[in-house]
Length: 74
Length: 230
Image (cartoon, rainbow over all chains, first blue to last red; front, side, top):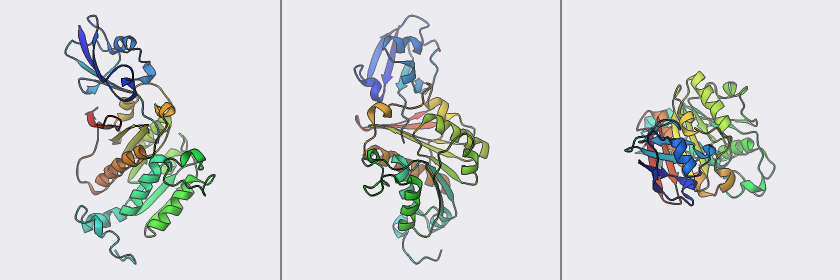
């Protein structure tokens, strides 16, 4: 199945703003970040269909995943 | 309110009523961090006339602060950031009370430092210390206006006691964010600080919408400002 992934801020570098990732049935966000070579420490905000999500939730083909890196300065 | 600077707040009307301006003068706000975000936040809260400001920072100014920190000057390298904030506030609004603490917030001192305030404002530079403050804010039932910056990017969220917003904003266990690689320029802190101050004022006058259970994410490189539900 194909999952739409939206990337934000520095995660766009070398990957683009929005992409379709090919996942097996029951694939998760953890599979997506492995595929996109995004370290787990770079997943700060994680939204699935615009709501707070988890790395391990099995995804459906209609899901949209948004990933933001940590912003911590002040 | 009697004032030797009659008309000081004239340009705040009509967006704030006379009663609201008077109400702000009765409020007590604590800003934790007097660096990039904190310098602008303190300036704006002082000018709008929040009656009592507590400013906290254990750090001193360094040359590398000059690119963005409003309170830093070439003459003030090595001086306390909190003391500089207190001095600045006295020159821009002598009619408000100011308490400056030259101390770093930690798990042990945070409750005592923030107790008794109406709103706490996040101008910190570490994710761990934000979590200490958010926990204390829940324990003391005080709203917490979160802000953070990294290069072209920033985020703001308003956290009410008991909300687990920071857990949603920082899924990954990390002490710092992308600011370690990107640094911070002059303009991102000013923008994020402005939005935080707007949130503080709305909380204090109980009017308008705040970013509760939401995050405003700002990307100045791509000109994207989005509000996401959490």
